[in-house]
Amino acid sequence: MSEAIDIKLADRLSSVGEYWFSGKLREIARLKETGRDIISLGIGSPDMAPAPSVVERLSCEAAKSDTHGYQPYVGTAELRGAFARWYGDRYGVALGADNILPLIGSKEGIMHIAMTYIDPGDKVLIPNPGYPTYRSAFTLAGAQCVEYGLCASRGWQPDLDEIEVAGLDGVKIMMVNFPNMPTGAMPREGLFADLVAFARRHNILLVNDNPYSFIRTERPVSLLQTPGALDVAIELNSLSKSHNMAGWRVGAVMAHPRRISEIIRFKSNMDSGMFRPLQLAAAEALALGDEWYEALSERYAEREVLGYRIMEALGCKAEKGQAGLFVWGRIPDDADDCFAFTDKVLADYDVFITPGGIFGSEGMRYVRISLCADTATLEKVCGRLR
Image 1: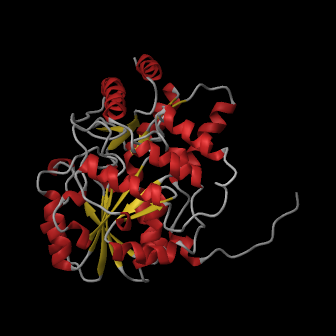
Image 2: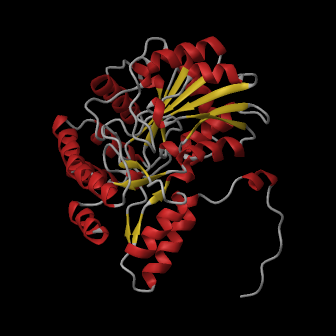
């Protein structure tokens, strides 16, 4: 193949690299090609299937002749209504269809929000540690990302007084993520009310990324349960984790109708709607009863026991009471750092776990393991580590 011509990349990419997992998974694939039996506990991609009724609905709708055209930019009435009912039934939050904007996965919603509200030089508060996409999306939009620290001594909760003292000049958006990833922390009592008051006081748009509220939690929580939250906040949610539909790419923005109309101005220029059978199958998923969530919780509870056992075998300390798809633990004091530690685990045991440093400097002494593997696989990891 001849050499491609040299084209200068856009300046906006100078401060954004390839997503860490993208490159790492290529490395894992190359190792597997050499014959090594690598067990990956890195990515939080549910290994279980959606409910059979959801798959059946998708198949049934896709077989129809009239479901293959362009769909409304704001999503179908069926899906918007299903999300609204889901929030009412599961979170106790009263929403209407005009509060809902379906997304092709909530990850795209972060980018849509960034492009809708950020001008070059605007500041955005992002958590450290936190989901790397927060930084990359807002950086691509031209924002200056300002970190606020989450640490174990505070239970991985933001210190709003500390954030205020540091200064809020130019801050337009604050990203939060509870239940938290990667730490698994649940919001402390009163945190959401404090965040809403903070956002109102400083005229900051609050964005809560909320895909983990049904995994290893006693009850689902939403920022929108807080009185007045819709005036200052947006919430992102997804079916990826709660319904084992990560590859289906179905999420939504929940917000004041004014925010929905603003975001659609950008989103409608980026896509032409979601496949209608996908939307109707997603509506089917959102209507599932208590038995679905109970079975999901039971399965992850079994895996959690093994996840903590793996952490113990690694010599890591993992606090109990974590939520979400992962177990987060502190590496041994004599380990150099999380990257060297995880590289050694991969080299010595053919087990891939995630270094906490990819989520920010506050994660440098931590690692994360995914519970998206069956109990037999997790038992196999325990056996290797012994």
